[in-house]
Amino acid sequence: MSTHQPPMPQAPGAPDWQAAPGGSYPGYTSPIPVVRTHLGHAVASEWTKIRSVRSTIWTLSVFVFLVVGIGLLVGALVSAHASESSLSGTNPLSFGFFGLLVGNMCVITLGVLTTASEYGTGMIRTTMTACPSRGRVLAAKAIVFFVVAFVVSLVSVTFVAMVQSSMLSGSGTESPSGGAWLKATVGVSLYMALLGLLALFVGSIIRHSAGGITIMIGLVLAPLVLALFMATESLHSVRDFLFEYSFPSQLGVFYDSTLSGSGPRGWDPLWIMLGLAAVAGAGAYALLRNRDV
Amino acid sequence: MIELDGLTKRYGEKVAVDGLTCTVRPGIVTGFLGPNGAGKSTTMRMILGLDHPTAGDVRIDGSRYEQLTDPLTCVGALLDAKAMHGGRSAYNHLLCLAQSNGIPRARVGEVLETVGLMAVARQKAKGFSYGMSQRLGIAAALLGDPRILMFDEPVNGLDPEGIHWIRNLMRSLAAQGRTVFVSSHLMSEMAQTADHLIVIGQGRLLADTSMADFIRRHARSYVRVRSPQRERLLDALHEAGVTAVEAADGALEAEGDKAEQIGELAAGHGIVLHELSPRQASLEEAFMRLTAGSVEYHAQSAAAPGNWGADRQGGTA
Ligand SMILES: Nc1ncnc2c1ncn2[C@@H]1O[C@H](COP(=O)(O)OP(=O)(O)OP(=O)(O)O)[C@@H](O)[C@H]1O
Ligand SMILES: [Mg+2]
Image (tube, rainbow over the protein chains, first blue to last red):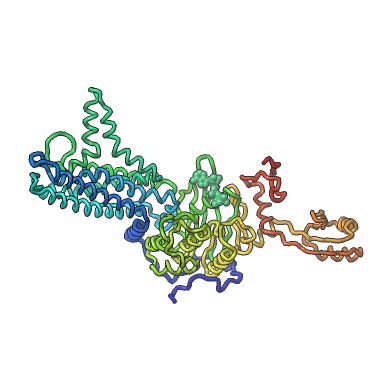
């Protein structure tokens, strides 16, 4: 027996409803200790939520499968078929690019679902009743998702990078510097997690899973597709801009040690994504505060 | 205690809740009644801070909902039974709610036990029947052992045993000194559960009184009389100034609460009576009389209930 008595019908009988006295809010006092809630509670709750649904397991397994599978496949193909001269001077880590080019869809999907799916089911009302501070709910979701996405990316990307560099060592590729390693593992994982965070905020703004995912895929693909159709001379500068800032080009920057040319370089794509996520986050927060749930 | 003060909600042109001022007190079950679309659910959403009022204010024990630092131990609410992720198990659904308020994990098992869902605790909510979802929703409301409870149509989908259970549950929760605020369309159920009534129609307050007072004020009481000498009885009643109408089965219904007078009258005239029964007007009848003018959505059927409707339309189906 616990100390708490479950409220069961032992003592019905007509209550004396004249007896509700004035004064400062009388009534029942629970034996359960009252806790002042804070962000930590919301984070624990969101962690339970994200780990207890299939969609998380699915999107993350497919992500790992794509990143690791494509990474290993590309590594094996390159080491089997490329000649030593054609590989000279290439960064062996750069073959991790292809897995992420496809795998980002999974991160986007999970990001959108983390917020938008609660609107589809009506769960959001239960969530907001349990935690009326809307900013805290959004922050907790963002923190939990970001950590999960970052850790899963980092583990799979690092695994692929280590396997690829050992597969290709001695085949003429250059040996990557510490900086190159950092960018191709931590850097690109932060980039992926931020992309997913952007998707999470878009999901919170759109409040519709399919809509949010479509918009995010559009954002990732549109610049490249638009650029492909800009054949006219007068649009060259626009086309180059779209190419350089398209998702694949920015992703490629993490594997590119050249500092020449225009467009983003070094860690720029990370700052760009951070800016986008921050703007979307501010928008999502403002809307969440003002709209009815 | 829940205090509404001039609470108003407008959705575009539509005024869903219109200047509602009333208080829901602890220690009793307060029924919240109104026809479809009257604004009951909207009012409850505003109490929980989910919808922002267009005007007016709601206070929970003196503070706004969003200022509560321990919301679930203060207010437990069931708004919509299906408002949960179908892919999550009942246990995990309650666990994430418990964690968000620092409620001990052991409470999850306790409330599952209370609502009788222990056996399906690990099953996904999407496989639940409506009644099972409703029970899970009630478990979530009880999770923090709150001093205020709010249920939006809790008996929907429950089996007879479940209805009986929740009726006793609500009464015992109120008897422990908690505030219990419950909406329902099942008048006979409400009549057995609620002590006090708040009735709204088209967003406006129509009544805020005790159950007994409400019925007394809004439903006619009458005496049902059956006699083989009906014509003589009618004459006698007419002479005595008692209005009586003929019921469908040939009995007479005499207005008012005058069983003794009618019995003596019949005896005096030597009229044989086969039945003489004072009838307690039902809550349903009282409710339909009061809200007749504010029912927005009429069923178009020849069998429309009762003859209190303001503008019954002929069956065109
Ligand atoms: N989000 C919304 N947007 C627009 N109109 C709304 C919204 N929510 C409610 N309404 C309108 O407000 C009115 C009140 O709705 P509400 O759901 O509160 O009624 P109710 O009393 O709960 O009805 P029911 O007995 O059918 O549950 C209805 O006319 C409804 O159409
Ligand atoms: Mg409703």
